[in-house]
Length: 126
Image (tube, rainbow, N blue to C red; front, side, top):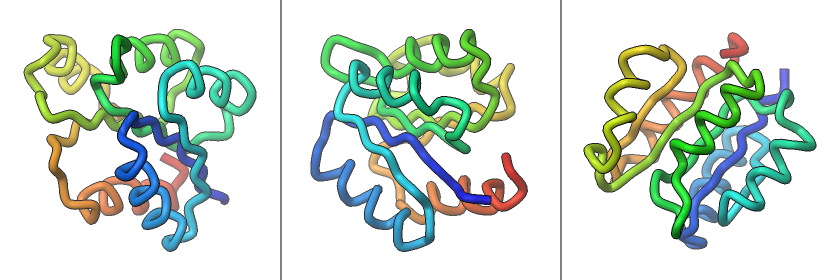
């Protein structure tokens, strides 16, 4: 099984670092610097992603809105929200409590935490 992850972050340097580290682990990474790009990638390949990793605050947009949209579209695999402010949106607590495939990592997080969170599950297909 090929592990394919959609990475969404408006910090270009961070996006490149995460993608590079995951690619070294054999993960195929598709990157998006905003939700407009993410929607295009998801629209054409949504069912192929074993996980989506998204920043919470993306300019005027919000990673939780994207989470709700992809769940509504039938995406039922892992979704990891990354944020510097876990309390910045009340929905984070709700989703953590109600969706076992929703994860939230507080920035700055150790990249190993993300790798440990995703890769063991990717082998089993999430």
